[in-house]
Length: 282
Image 1 (cartoon, helix red, strand yellow):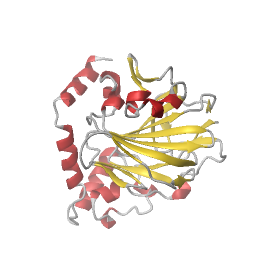
Image 2 (cartoon, one colour):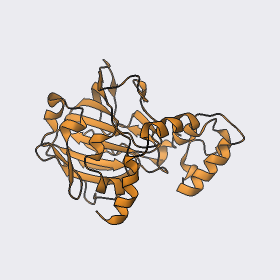
Image 3 (cartoon, rainbow, N blue to C red):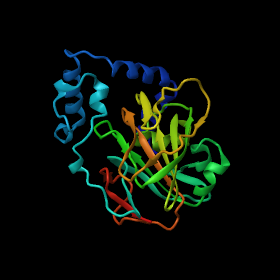
């Protein structure tokens, strides 16, 4: 932790996170053909978005900014790591942290941990399989592809919406704000896989105006408040299938029950990832 990180992070405590994010939600859905293409070009220039990777690379063709932000990519550019026992990257992004979960404690940054129990909404039965499992936290920047795909084939057992703040999830906040990912609004998707339980935690952040899943549509902004648990019988998704998306950038946390899996060599904090990349063998 350094003084620069602190100075960049402390104002976030007083900002009206949800008001800002809901405003962004509305603005990014405005249909205005005289403004939207220019906004897309400006955003792409600032964040160095590679539009040539998109199925539709023409800024003029998007009706809203959100339609552009959740754009699909040409599938041939993101080959899926082969093998039923191979964990594939669910997103384009950058590794924030990874490793073993130690008695339910998950490493956030130097000097900061949070618990699997609080991350998953406070249910001991839900958290129990992961108490000594493994995790990977992946940060998505504004320039990244924002659809989220399955790292393994699995059957959905439950979806849990957990309310919270909407702090930024950039590196400086992870290093300075205690229990960041367990404090932010999030959607937890629980799966049974051939290799044990899998939790995919989609963490909201300031300007992340909405989180969607393919089986439930728009989950945030929520209707009402409080932890909300739902089941969706017969939802089975193959490895590589889309399972959700962020409407603006954020973080995905993978929790795996399988403690014996072997991470691919070369994976480490701050390493960039591409969707479908080989992460581990189970």
